[in-house]
Length: 187
Image (cartoon, rainbow, N blue to C red; front, side):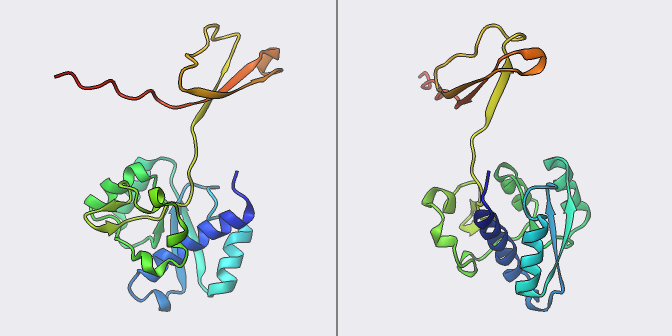
């Protein structure tokens, strides 16, 4: 879970970075953001603070899937100033001309990102930067031991946690896992 300072920094970086790269952004009275609902940019305290500091009203529009987000960008060109895209869809959006590159020099804390996040091949294409990484995480899963009696393989998994009292008193186990490396290519 992100703390308030990290979330505000992420919001400010995303909004300011995108706003500064738009034509006539200084004259903008509204900043239109396309995002998942409840994903951080629409937190009342963050939006209010951004509006107080910049004088620009933040207007949110939401999507429920990446496909819906792409459709909104395709059918409403020029509507959105900031789009929070999963990095796996950034290349497609850039190739289709749905998003514009940003100038990282205009994002004051861009250099503070880790090198891997700053130079992500998912956000950097053709010598241009199409996004600023603002969050990173691990995908976890849990399973009900009364329904799945054979545990998933332990290789590449860590952080096993047992939580008693799940549905119908079942024990739930959670693990953080990564995919095993691809087997070497056969020649």
